Image 1 (cartoon, rainbow, N blue to C red):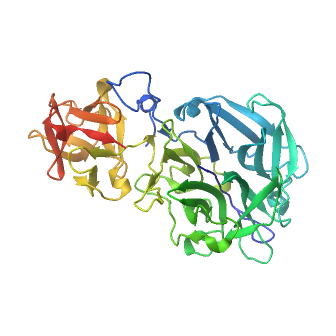
Image 2: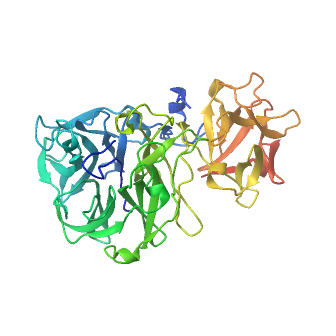
Image 3: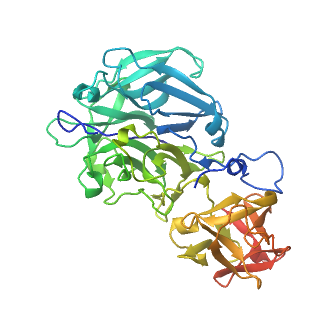
Length: 479
């Protein structure tokens, strides 16, 4: 399965103007108590890595997850690795290379991407000269090369500059292999087109060279030209016979968002007419979950091989000064789901805290534990209404909180009815809003009420209530 990335503001003319996570939350286990066998990977907690934008994460054949991204100072290339996604949060970070003292590589260092090509490691990145003025935004794409097999310990040196079709602003390169061919995608300002950047693709002929380029997308929709006319940072994922290419659009404040192109997986990727462009953004700011300007995405997989979306976003909307110099774009991850046609459904940015899950009733024909506004339901509403976060509470118990209603959680009434009610930190004294997660084999769970021992959450006649744990309606499949 191919994967990829993006981000940034540009120059149109001569100038460019440019839920807090607890430590306890980072230790929640994917399968909770009662699991059989070995240790379960810790659940990733968002933000996964703070103050790292334009992140790339991939699982290499050596069993490590590798991550790189832009640092707020824009002065160096960094790399970290861990055996799990969650482990990237506290993984040691190595500086691979620092910008030079003068010349074209002495200014901003943006959007690094590491790829292994013919056994050699390369990091592609965008860079410009220092010194102030408009030359700071004379951004071009370069690569550094590792002399050793281990990118964390090898010596890195400048390989050279990407030979783009035009000597103009370009950045956000991505390398991917599809049907045995290696492709290079990037964003560039094309002479004669009055945009900040468009998307391009070409087959690679060497680490820094490509064949004839195809222009895939020009920002034209209103959501692509807010603040700046931007298409950048392509990333690719394949599913159900189609290849999907996401990209970022507009200015890098709360208006930043993801668009998407799609193509038949067997079609010629270099024929622009073979691609279809979504008329609406597929991922954007969510006030409900308090994530602003999500973008410059990548794709990876979790420990079970399920597709994951990687992106950055801020916790707040209002920014003092230029968004480019705001350090609070944090790296985030979440599951990628697919709709009935096989297209990615990214939902909304899930917000801070342990990654949410979806719970499918074993007794209600595959319906989800969900909510409509503030009412609990058993059904199949839009994806975000089915995503529920397990928050650590007292004595190893959890609270179940919908991502769209961060201040609420499932609460049990005296008669065994279940509703959504305001959430208190740690849970209520009587245990009405707390549950014990009991694993019933791989991917199956029950939620026992703390307030009413022996009773579990059950799907009953389209709603949620308590029933004896022996009742098959209390069994849920974790998705």
